[in-house]
Length: 303
Ligand code: PEP
Ligand code: MN
Image 1 (cartoon, rainbow, N blue to C red):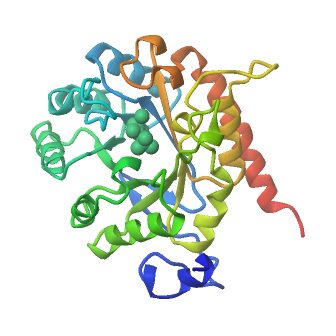
Image 2 (spheres, rainbow, N blue to C red):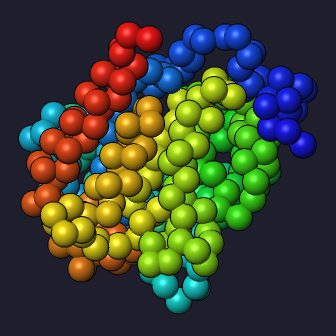
């Protein structure tokens, strides 16, 4: 089925944009705007490993004026013997430290709807020092009960990661489940597609589809270059492929960036190869600013 035709029919009756409609849609959470014309940076730990690393990460984010982060507590792992994430036990210090360092929103994956209550209860217990954007991971892209659960609450927005082995139509229908259940605060995240042709990258970068999602739907779009590229290899100018993919997403109009960093990347317990070291954050943020400025200039060219 033609995706453009489908966007205007009844499949995505809540999330589809009407063809001539040029409005930038979105929502506000914790006084931070998530719109199809705004831009927010979420960097942080793929998987929380200890309190020191969480504190060190938040501290450096704060020093650069960042107020959003990513922190993984519930990890969906391919193998049952791999580190599964610290789960609820790390949430008290993650939330308290976030509050101490002015982090207002943490992107955090949940793998089961019971984790929604766990997060709410622990936030409440510590007087809501921060808030969460609930991440639905690519492996749960068609977990319809989880989609309904994150949609049935409106306290937290949802970061929906495109399914890595399903069509765009199917991922958009999955998002419609969230909206249909009642929550319209959804950011759609591109994170690369599983393909043998991606090699030597981890996934095939799909950031050329940033404008597609913005054109077809009312959702702001996030890109995750860490999971798309999956390694820290760099080019002849020493610019890592992750930086290049970041640039591609931003210059195409991405509204949010989700990136793995770690105080000691090689010690990271999940996806160590793709974590950027804290020492490179300043350079990375400068590169990001150049790209966003270039995107804004592209929008304003007289035509
Ligand atoms: C993650 O962001 O930690 C993650 C597991 O991502 P994805 O679902 O895109 O693989
Ligand atoms: Mn991962």
